[in-house]
Image 1 (cartoon, helix red, strand yellow):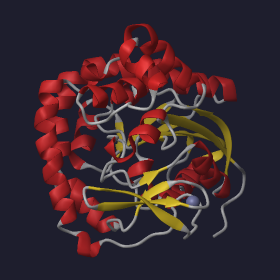
Image 2: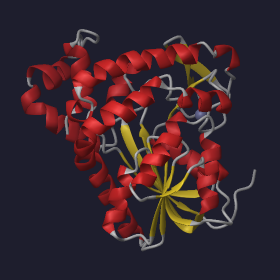
Image 3: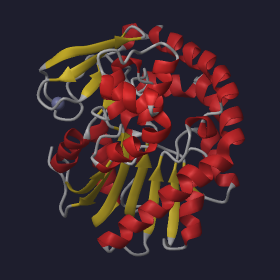
Length: 336
Ligand SMILES: [Zn+2]
């Protein structure tokens, strides 16, 4: 998979303008932002990691999660997403133009991976809930596997929920935090690239806990702030984005799950793009590998030879900046 396949360059130019407009809209509401403690461990000891687009990203001194604080409140966030030009552009232009590539490169492998996780953990049948389904491509692929009795899309954004319904999916058009567990239980909850956007990851995880049956599986993916391209590029990395309020790493997200009623079963970093993203910044003249001869060799001088093996090395050793974490819901409720 190459970046240009899933983010076609000519369309991404239009996206950049919309993204900039979204950032301006977000900054205009800065008076309403609030300070928060670390979203992973709750600790208040921190130092400024970096500033991007005038927003402050803090590094937790206890668990090394990086997080935006001050940050928009949940109601401001909801409004920003509802008014987002960037998401409208994705929905109307980028996604339709790249969906089939995305289906083959991202969503089919994602569904197969979830199936393999269920196999290895002995979870059969039952209900799969995807939280943050977008256009519903993953749910379609999960349904196609035929291994779950029900596949349900949880998608609070009206346009996306409508798209999921057009595809014949079961849709719950509200945030997972508002689902009544008396009305629905799940055997598997999956959520991809969602938790980094949320005001309170802890509330989100607790909501997943409430809808899961004891022994049920939670499968999450999100950026890994200790991964190669983020660790190297820092605020230059596209992972460090105004909307990414929470930048966890495997241990910090694992601890958050552990404290909120889950047992962590597996962590992996199957990201494919780290080496390519760093190389792109170097080629564009925005980042220098001066003083890093080994990286200069791997990513520039001998790219054709080493690009893929180097990325494979990152993936196999937990060093890619895209991570998956699988956890099992423990019995009992979670105390406050
Ligand atoms: Zn922390």
